[in-house]
Image 1 (cartoon, helix red, strand yellow):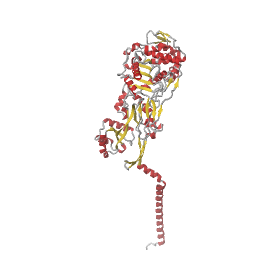
Image 2 (image 1 turned 60 degrees about the horizontal axis):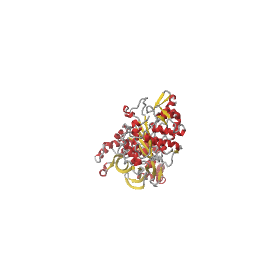
Image 3 (image 1 turned 45 degrees about the horizontal axis):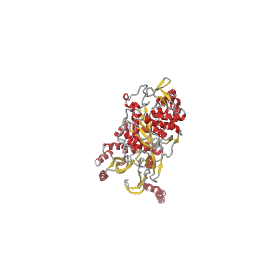
Image 4 (image 1 turned 30 degrees about the horizontal axis):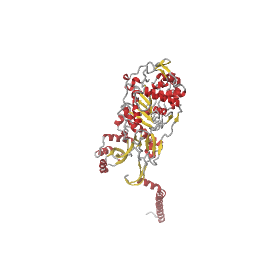
Length: 636
């Protein structure tokens, strides 16, 4: 018998299923409608912005870097535009195959491949990296014809830095290089990272680094509509960049060039300063280098040559090298004695050629001594014995106090490099310095005998050429001190306004006029009848000066004979000068490493520099060493 069916129950179940399905459909449509409203109404602005971002991209426009000119308007650093062939690794398949294919169209040298590999290791995957720079118009046209074959490869117009005078003033100007992680950290600490979008290079040394934020300018932007493949379709908006500010220097590039030539192949340094302003006229460190090598990324071969060169051309000796000042220290010792009342100008000693202190005998360079020596004679003929006795009478802390007041043993704050991190302090010895310098108690004690050699610029004394130049410039300016600086004014590219640098002196040391007259007269005497007389014979101007010779190693009582000493152990030659004496417009310090006596090699360089600056006399070549000056130079 068949089952009994209840039509009413079946109908109820059917209605329930229909109702459930209807509710499910309504709920589904409700969810879709809610989502639609959420996306199209509530989140409309958000997704519209996202869509615009996918369609529009911001391309940074790197500004022109500021130009650097010398005091006469001669360009020392400028920019020029050139085409580069660049590869974006993230948009390219096999890099090696791509580069090989490119090399069939455009000349790609092994050095280009090496540079690309090095930059690839440093760069991010989405950054474009140059495989070739400075393309010719013909090469650009060749690539354009084959552009379709190379996804992720494109020709770009780039600005390149150029240093027209090459090696001239390279340690002052510095150079630029690709941004590293360390550079980025420095930029971020200064909160300037937003202004460096798209920037590949920054200043690495010298003025290029010190004035980086002035020279860089303000980055511009271009709004560009792109397609799904990331290719630009059209420009929507453009905010032009603002070029970096220009630097107008105190430096005289012709004087700089002549000074570098005066050194010839000798190692050394010279800093020339305008006493009345502190403006640096010449800043020379030899040997030098060509900063153009770094613009496009220096090759490993050139980098190795510069770094492994025995004469260390990358070292800026003017601010990084610390040397004993030798007898150039004596005029400052004499002035300190006058100011402190430790000596009078006519107070004389009898010099037997040595000074005994305890069980040690400090010898004068002149056998038999100088006889009766007053202050004038002590400077003119560089009498060591006079200063042995004077140093003992003054004491180390009095010496340190006076020498510290003229900037010795302190960073000058010259506008080179990043802040003053690249400048050496040198060593200004004192009792406190020795306590800080040494760890063992027996080494920390200052012994009276150590003061004796300090008086002739030896012992622990070690100062940079720029410190010595600042000191002699202060002396030439009668005690009014300025911070040495290279930039005369900064030219604002927006307004054309000129912002001067260092318009006011650091301090006036208040030296007595009568004491200054004694020192000035004696320093003129050095070049008329003393150790500098041969170098300045026939000079058409009055010049104050002082020769100096600094020992590189201890002779331990033996007589110094240059011919018997290895070249790298020979004495350093020094000379300080200022002229014209009536109203000095230039003061300088010269150092020739392993150059022997100051009158032998440093003074002739100073003469050549002063002859050009004061008389316009052009030299024929490098300054000639005066070997005969050895016999006349009564140095330590």
